[in-house]
Length: 419
Ligand SMILES: [Zn+2]
Image (cartoon, rainbow, N blue to C red; front, side, top):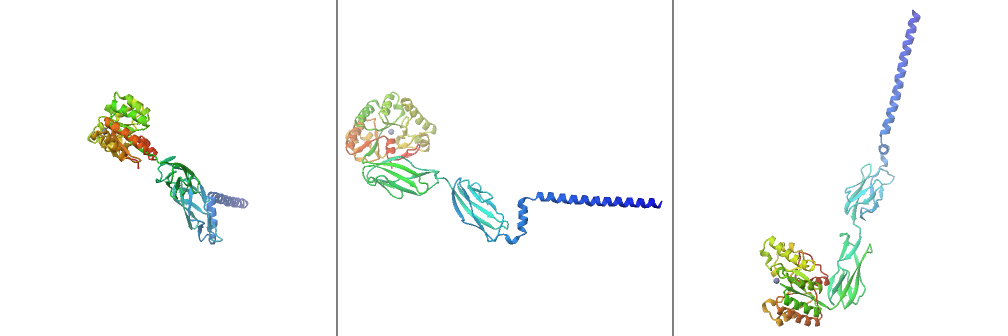
């Protein structure tokens, strides 16, 4: 029995031991595996942070950029160089306050995304910061002049303006002329005609070396636009066209719609012989007294009649009595041409009077108001053309006058004379 009892005790003790050993083993394994997975969960960054934080004496006292402002071109990259206080080290975090304008990667390389300005900030682990202001400007693609050539008189002066593409890519310009004796140009692009001839003006951008050229023609020709309103009428308009052909003079007709039916051949002849066809409403009503619908009808009816006759609409519009409002400007669909010299030909109906009015009031760039309704106006105009041609005048259409003088005509704008 005794032996048996001890045997039982021994077995129990051995069993308990075995359990204890087993538990402690299991715990060891458990702790080890738990600690490994914890380490795996920490990112490299956090590990670095932990290791650096433990060596606090190495963190920088400051971070500095080599520059604090920089202008870059859109699409380009720029890497910021920074300096930390001596014997220090830190991971740097980079960010931009305006990622539409500039973005930055974790190496401090900035990419210019859009025109404007942005602040790029570099931050150390201990929160020391450096800032740089980045201004992004557009690419200087091209410079151009509004026109490729200008005709001006001897002694005239004007400023040649450069247009930039994109619009706000301003650069300093240097100016030169191909012929100092004919045309001179100053630092601001002011061109002065010195004598008859031609010269090419060149503008060059200082950085991009982009150029634009423009021909300046200097002559003493003076240009006039005679305008004939209220027609066409068979006899007088035909007589006028004959006289103009003989004189090699070109004019502008402001026709009323109700005079067009039956005279389509006259319109065809006007166009064929180099004259300009303008509209003067349908029934010569004072447009400002009409309803919007009536204004639309007055303008569109005449335009249709002109188009049916010659295949194109009126290129210029003159409201009866020179009277217009916003609706007229809006509906006209053409530049509004008034006049600078009113001959009052319709009042005096006298050939000599009309001739004298034109000759006495002529000047380079004048727009002269006449009416081909009256034979006296036609005869007076042809006589004046002969006289003025001897004085160096050329007779051109309204659109040609503005073209020659380098002015753009815009639909719905009002013009009384050039410049
Ligand atoms: Zn009229």
